[in-house]
Amino acid sequence: MINTIIFDFGDIFINLDKQATTNGLKKLGLSEWNDDLNQLNIQFEKGKISREKFLLGIQKQVPNASIDEILTAWNAVLLDFPLYRLEFLQKISKKYRLFLLSNTDSIHIDTFEQESGISFYSDFYQCFEKVYFSFEMGMRKPDAEIFNYLIKKYDLSKKRTLFVDDKKENTDAALSLGLQVWNLQVGKEDVIDLFDKKIL
Image (tube, rainbow, N blue to C red):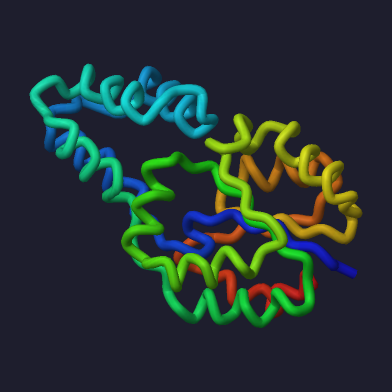
């Protein structure tokens, strides 16, 4: 019987347009998303580089763009956070130990908090025993260390812990460590379908 659920954030609770940032940067002159940008993003998501260094790193790829234009393109990925998902979360938080575990960066979290407002994001964060963002932890999914950190710190039973994420590489990593998983199919499934999946 599941007693703990670890949730991803993007496309689980907040809707994302994952192509919007690439499209925005292409309009600013980027030829294509490349390995340099990928590595830069990973470093930023792990909190290894500053916001300024990250933005300047992107600017090297689009030298005619301003930092403000780059920020706009970077934040274009963030869409809406439907209220019904928060209400669902509030309901299940009374029955389960809940954790948030997200690969994200300080720019996206600052933007989410500014746009949603303190009342909304406070209500959201309060549903969890602890909220974990990769940039604060210095780790990111799908690396085993990030899952093992939570398992050890909170003495979680793997067979009684469910991990929910939209990226198969992340759920595969969690599954290999012995966690229960739901690889949510964005556009076909919604986090509120959790009980219909007969996982819990």
